[in-house]
Image: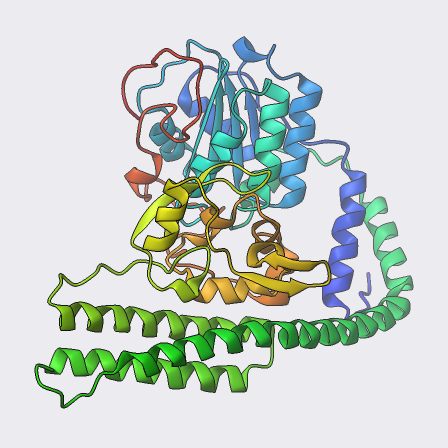
Length: 447
């Protein structure tokens, strides 16, 4: 069979082919019932959802198939197991992760209790806790659907290749595949024109997003410059030492780097380098202030979540966004006091077409802006359940605005790592992964 390729249409054709094949697949395979961890793990290597026969009353076959299809269609490494209340819990998450051998997010409904663990490269522990807490008290179907929907919007990585392995009988004939290919090639000319139009529109949207973002970033640079002006530090002043001068030099260099990076920015994701430089500069100023005042040097912490211009955070505080679940966020001393008094924090708001909004509800371009400030893998946990957090986890967002908002080193989600994973990611007793109420009782033992 001769294959005809049209220049520039590889991605559109692949996408159309996958969509067409998805229609031809009648369903998603379900794991066979078993009661030992090894067999549960074997099942999860061939499909994302496992329901123990003793827990079949919690989730019907139809609902389990629909949940599995949702995960497979999203292409994310999310594993769900539904087990009976009496299932042994000793080392359950760690043993299941070891036996499955795939980096991902593992959720378990055990009787009427629910918990989850994940490799930190897929989802930080804080984010897992927030997701688990947000679905406590729901029925099995609602809980698993809600958790999966929210998890798919936040987890990183790809579906394991084993989900498309030999365990599936596709039922797709070669004739059907040929027919699909013929249809795709026949529409190549129209698709090519569509791609060119979409590329032009995408470039225009990115320019407009950068223009809006530039206003906010310039405000950040100006605010940092004003901090430098107020500092009143002279490298040759009495009492100044080499460490102080180095702190001051790093702060000045960060200011220059931020201005240069913003001047050179061509796309929204380019501003990440700007806010990274500003975050470095503010920490240098915090070190300098501590040395001058004879205080212990501060630890390196992320900036205040509510407004990075407040400077490095001093602690984590519990905060609940409107319509969202509680989560721990880094806060400055002033915002920590406001929260303790029951007052609202001083939130950074920006202009949008709907008026002033917190930056996490202002649009996708603020992902790179926030990513430069909040590295180290904490950003997904901070933004879970927000508009920006939901956007940032999608493949389309990564294509438009870039990725890498934190240190997600090691194996990517969906990679086969065997037993090579951080034990702390899957440690703790069942129910410790979230802060919700698991209905009392204690499963005993730790994972």
